[in-house]
Length: 345
Image 1: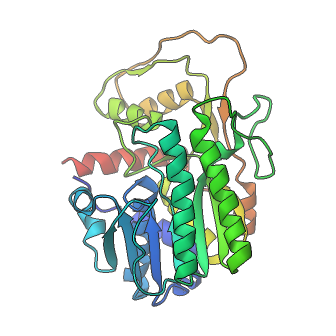
Image 2 (image 1 turned 30 degrees about the vertical axis):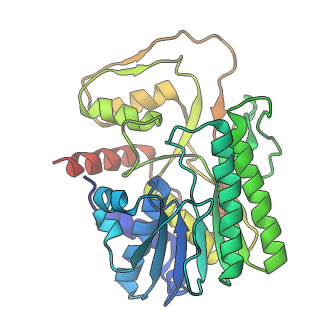
């Protein structure tokens, strides 16, 4: 069973967007896809907090394939007064009635097992459907939640990718479906903006840590926190050399709402952490921060080849939206662990 986020986390996200920006949502109707996923839950929780704080009178219409499952998994979000759940698949949902002011398209389930073709279809067909909905309902502001996967493989000599990097996924690989699907989704979004005048922003998301992140899926940090909380060894199946950077989820939510509400039209921003560390270093960090008695065991010996990197440069979004440095990774790990242990008490 889930539980509400902490007041400290919600206040943090609220402050990053800023009260004047939240005020622009007074009386707004917002349509959100992907609201039942990790990113969507944080976006929903942040909006509900802003509505309670300022009395915005906002309505959030949230698309879900299974509203009943969402109500059972996250009742603190699904049963909130401003939330209205509508059943449907992002690729062919029936358009909700009435005018909408804002759309956030955050759908693409990276947890669910799907064929590459299905993954690509969800990205592209879902985005096309959302854009058609936005045009039909007179939406003026739209945020597309994209991914750092659009850059393809990061050159090992490049410390961090900025938004001007022109790499791309390797189209010979089945695993390129997600990144290429997001690339096409971005193109469709910018073309729709040119045709309709809708103000769009694109968030290229990287890796995150925090409440609502699953402890039993493919997210390494989630698995590491699970094992550390159980006092077990953290076992890394690979060589532990790939590099990642992690942003705490309260920063993620604040950054995304800041993008939508006060970011310039057409903006494309990386959203992720600034500190790069290897998977093995991350495991050691989780063990230390959570004072776990378990050890870190790396099963494969490094080959000596340059380490894979998936690390973003977030200087642009911080400068242009005047965002402070994000919460340190150690604090993010502690808050994530505290939330998960409280949720299971």
